[in-house]
Structure formats: structure tokens, C-alpha cells
Length: 321
Image 1 (cartoon, one colour):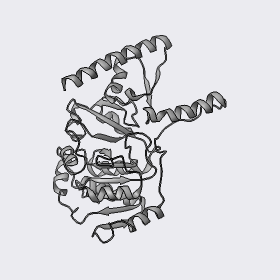
Image 2 (image 1 turned 30 degrees about the horizontal axis):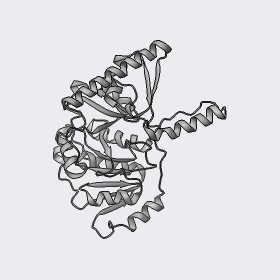
Image 3 (image 1 turned 135 degrees about the vertical axis):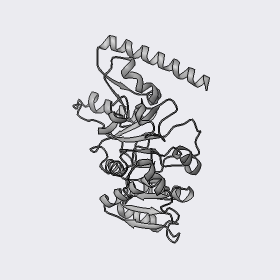
Image 4 (image 1 turned 180 degrees about the vertical axis):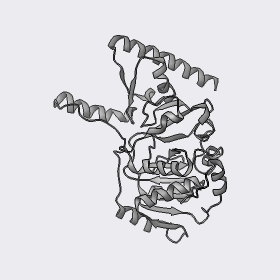
């Protein structure tokens, strides 16, 4: 632990020395970072206090995979002379699956005959039901739209949970993730509420910045707040991911907290991509509920077992729908 802390401290010293030198040379206020070190969210979150840069962009596949977009941009702009008009506001460039394909995956899976509850719902009803299950303490798999590009699950291939629960980190690790206990989980928060919960509100749409959680909010965002008081947040904008934004808003309406715990949809394997992979992960883990496109799937045992506890945490008398 001492060695890791020392390496992090030294990395930050070198990084900020270089960034301050870059600013003296350019006098620019905007910074774009790439490379594996650009995934160091703790260092990224300190850039605004340790350098004069005011806006920082880290694309969602900042490591070697991002060379693909760099090559494409070089050809498009430098060789073809096309204007710079593309803004990367989301990372959902991976495969997507139609309702017909998802239905076929369900019908061909072991879900059929397993006694699970399966319901196809309109979007508004789906997000209300899913938010209610999270508020009731369920661990919920969320498979929606096109897959994320890059290493972070950003609301299309995610496992979601209640951030208010003091035991949720341990529950997630015991039942699904089995990760080292020092590794924190991340909060996804509505972008318009980020400043209420974090001491820095610069956008973090790709989960590449860690900010200090406001002291008065650490007892609210219990599960995703790290031992040092920071959270590796994802700010969620309605324009970038409308369905995920609606889910978090509905959870906020139920609990007063416009954020959820967000971790990747996997269990020591690559993040799920296809519907069948999501179903397989759901079946072999102790996940309570699965949202697969427009389908809400629940295990027989995923009942109202923790509803009273979740309501007492929120102080709300509203029952999850």
C-alpha cells in the first residue's frame, strides 16, 4: 500500500509539472489528455486545483484502443481537409440489438422454465419499475442500447445498485464482482446535480475524474465514496443517454438521491456485449433483477425483502413502484 501511494504521488508530481510547463508554453485553457495515464482519475480530478487549465477532455478509450479514433481523425482532417465539427458526447459506438433479437435470446435461454418473472414494458413504466427495484435494495443488471467503447461501463452495460446502502460495496463483491476490497465502485449522477454532491462540477461523462464528495453528502453516497472521501463519478446528461438519465431521475424522485452505484456488467470476465452474455451473467450470479432492452426479468426470490430498510435510509414513505 505504501509503494502504491508513493507511485501515485510521484506520478502526480511529474504530471502536474508537465502540464504547468505546457500551459506556460501555450497559454491555453483547454486540455486534452490521452494514453493509459489519462485513465488515472484521481490525478485527473486534481488538474483544476494544481494547474491553470479550466476545461479537460479525456476520451472514453484513452488507451491504445483510442489510436483508432486518432487515425481516423488524422485522415479526415489532415489528409482530406474536412472541418472539425464532431464532438464526442457519448461512448455508445459498440453493437446494439433489436427487440426481436433480445426476445429471441430470452426464448432460447435457460430463463424459460426457470420460474423467473419476465415482462415487456413501455420505457416510462420500465424505468419506474427498475428504479423501484434499485430503491428496494435489488442488484440490477442494465442492458440498454449500443455497448460502450472503452473500459468503463457508462449506463448501457452496467450493474446498478443503491448508493445509500452502507453494505452495498460488500454485497456487490460477495454476490457478483469478487473484487479487491480497496477498489471502489463508481457513482453515476445526473449532471445537473453534480455540484450538490461533489466539490468539483466539471463534467465527467466518461468516468475519468475523481472528485471529493462534499462532507455533508458522504453519509448519503455511502457505497461509492472511497476511503479518501472521493468518488470516481460519471455525470449523466439527458442528451447523451436519455433512458439512463430517466432511470436515475426516477430513482431520485423515489429516494431524494439523483445517483446510483454503477459498475461494469460482468463477473471477472469482459463486459457483456450480446443479450445472451447478459442472460448468462444474470443466471450464474446472485443478481436480483435484469433489464434487457424493454424486458424486466426478476428472480422468484427477488421480493420485498429489503424494502423497509431502504425506506428507512431515505426517510421517504413512498413505496417503489
